[in-house]
Length: 296
Image (cartoon, rainbow, N blue to C red; front, side):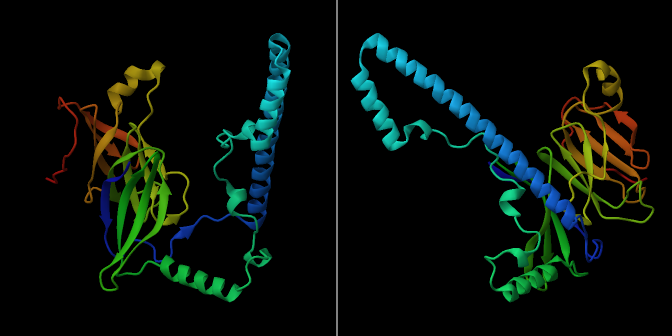
């Protein structure tokens, strides 16, 4: 499964020329690497202990079988065969091991400490090229793409420049659920000035608002809606969506208003300043896939 369920444009001149970047200090990175290695060591020790216990159990069973069936010679030959071809660990594909962690990709805090890197000038040149690509020009458009590949969901921020014939992924954001609709907006209750944000509707009843001017962001700027809870089901049904949100529309004239349509057949008008629903409309008898706000 590999497809794009939603996308939208960001006009020229809106994004920061140099987006903010969340970075760990060298001390924080060292601590993170150390903690990750320690966690990995504990996992490996636990797996080794379980493996030893399993081996002991298998040996006991083998001995009982030899005694009961009086086939000691046959069993010994089988054990020699297993040892010779390492059949005990043949099916051990490491499924319980983390497929990748930061200790696999970040061993050195500074590239100068890595003895395998000999051409530091070439590395510096590549870093300069990356820095140049990191800058968003006034002539750049941004294309926001919701991308689903297997079990992962990502919001890709592409840079498109027609004059320079450039089109590449500037940065991406890992999403917690499959995206279904995107809507750009410039309003945030925490900032008086206009910003660069995107509302993401997904398979949950909660809308996530992400700051596009921050790279390597881990959490949305804020959210609209509530997850379903059994003890508050009726209260949530009256005010919020109870199923996936599949359509969005932002009012660029009244900037604090966002509308959302859901698979629960309702439309909600949200007050972004308060982060609360202004009105819930239950006028439809099926999923609200598309709608548009008319300005009167």
